[in-house]
Each structure stands twice: as C-alpha cells, then as structure tokens.
Length: 128
Image (cartoon, rainbow, N blue to C red):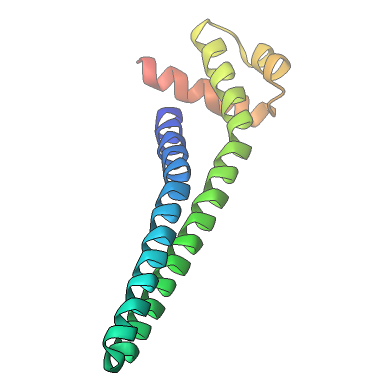
C-alpha cells in the first residue's frame, strides 16, 4: 500500500512538473496560431470566422488543461498531507518486524491501541 501511494505520489509530482511546460507550449502555440490567423485574415478576409472559431477552441483547450492542472495540484497536496501519516505507519510496521509489542508501537508512534493491534495482526498474518 505504501509503495502504491509512493508510486502515485511520484506520478503526480511528474505530472505537476510537466504541466507548466505543457501550458507554456500551448500558450505559445495559441499565440502563434492567432498571429497566423490575423495574417491570413488580412490576406483572406472571408476565412476570419473560421479562424476565430479555431482560436476559441484552442482557448477552451487551454482552460481545460489549466483545470486539470489545478486538480492534479490539489491531489498532489492531498498526498503530501497524508505522507506524514504514512511515515508513522511505516515506522510502526518496521517496529512490528523488529518484534515490538502493542505497547511499544503505541508509545513510539502515537497510534491508538486499535490501530496498533490491527497493524500487528496484519503483520503476523503476512509472515505466516
């Protein structure tokens, strides 16, 4: 479970790092497309409406990507907030591997008794 969360966190980090570059490329592409359309409008005035529609579509796509980036950032922050909890459970699991009893896990990791007992139970089932 911890590996899965770490893998998801790494994937989210990569996505968060890639989105600004993608956004910059999209915005540059839109600016170039708009400049091209203006030049073409001057040359071929009757196609102005078509170019305007393309521009609106591109603007809409950028908005969609920005919304996705916001969602990814929120997910990333959520996983970062959960990470300290994961460290506590990882430490508790490591203590169980080292032979710690429920009381030691409770004292060392500040876990409720029920959680410490459940963690030990899961560990013991895994090693059987």
